[in-house]
Image (cartoon, rainbow, N blue to C red; front, side, top):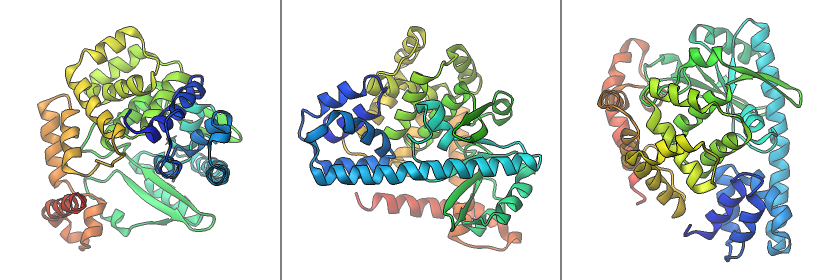
Length: 378
C-alpha cells in the first residue's frame, strides 16, 4: 500500500489473530496520526484500531492522540451498547405485535462477524419488514417518539426501499426497509432470507437476523452499491474468518440470483487486502474471472491511494454496470437508475400526490445535478 496510514488501518481491521503482527509491521513507516484518526472515524473502524494499538503501538503513539483515541473509543463503545439495547426493545415490540422483523448490519453483524456487539459502531439500526407490515411498525415507532426524517416517503415512489426515522431523546436513527436494497442494483431475496434466518442472543439482545451465508451475500451486494470501503471489506473478512460458511450454498445462490460478480469482487478484495480465508476451489473461480479481478483491482487502487467515495458519481455508475452479470441486468440498471424516482426526488421538488408521475421527468434532472455537484470539487 502506498499510504502508511491506510496500511496500518487495514492491518488493524484484518483477522484478529494476524492483526498485531501486521500492525507492528505497518508501524515501521512514519504515521500521520491525525490523518489516521480522521480516517478511522470516517471508516467506522476506530474501535478495532484502538484495541490493536493499545497492545501493539504502546509508546509509539503521541500522548495527545492516544488520549483522543481512548476517549473516542470509550464513547463509541457506550454508544454500541445503547444501540443494542434499543434494537432489543424495538424488535421485542415488533414481535409482540405479530410482525416478522429481520435486523441486519449494526449490533447483530458486530456479534456474528467480530464476536462482540461493542466492536463495530453504527450510525443507525437497519430493520427489514414485509411491506404489508410497514404501517403497524411505523405506528409502534411513532409511539416511541420516532419521526420520519422526510415526508417524501409518503409519496411511495417506485425506486424507494426504506424509510428513515429519528428520535431526538434518547437519540437513535432507524432505517425501516421493505426491500433490502434499492431496486436498480443487485437484488437480495428477502423471502428466502427470512426462511433461513437465525436468532442472535448476545448481552441481552435477542433478535432475528440473516444466516451467515445470506449475510455475506448481502454485505457484498450492499458494499458493491456503495463502491466499497475499508470498513465493508473488514466486515466481509471478519465474517469469513469467524463464521463457518457453506460455500457451496453461497455459490449456488449467487449464480441463481445473478449476483456472482458483485459478491466475487468482495471476496477478491477480502483475500487480497486482508488474506481472508477462502476455499481453494472458490478462490480459483474468483481469481480466474478476469472481469472480477479487474473491478476489484480498480477498487483496491482507490483504497490504496486516497480514500474516496465513488457512490453517486459517473465513475461509480460505470463500476456498477461492470458488476452486473448480464446485458439485461445492465439495461434494467440504466432504466431504473436514470428514470425510476425515489424519496430523494420527492425531497428535491415536492409535488401533490396526484402529480406523482411527473417525478419520472424530474429524476433525470436531479441525478444530473447531483452528478455535477459531486464532480465540481475535482
